[in-house]
Image (cartoon, rainbow over all chains, first blue to last red; front, side, top):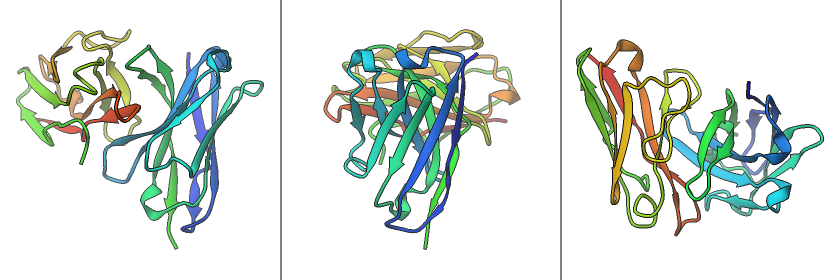
Length: 122
Length: 110
């Protein structure tokens, strides 16, 4: 059974940095494309970005609001996905979910973690 | 302002049928499949429908999806109180080169 467990959330000041982790199990992590999706309090879902498997190039893509500030990486030896967040803004406050990506063309998020809350506030 | 447009809320009585619409453009729904997610109160989202109309294993066949051009819809038949949730449509957007979501629709079972 697929399991995704996010960690690393917390309170950080505007302009600060934070790194989230997502521990994966129950599937071949090294073959998986993975995404981060966030949800601001009381708001809808927003895709943050994704990383392809190393077999498929290991490249990353990001949504415009986070491009240049956030970096997605992976450690296949530890079955762990990361989201490094720099220059954080109050509008980055959200629950961050990691997901497994499936499909080609229009990818879909087959499995989700329970999420970790990031609060950006002075 | 979400790229995909959904009604903020819908409501219907138990055992009835309800549909939730999702409207997009040629760069997303017009050229790519739509996927739907269900988010129960206080829970993480869950995949409900993928590739316009396919159901993941374990999802009730009371849920169905369809798409035509730049519009899609999710239908739920035989409504139950446990269906009360937020529903989101999503698709890849070729112009933005990323996944875009609808703003979400809150379903209330009266």
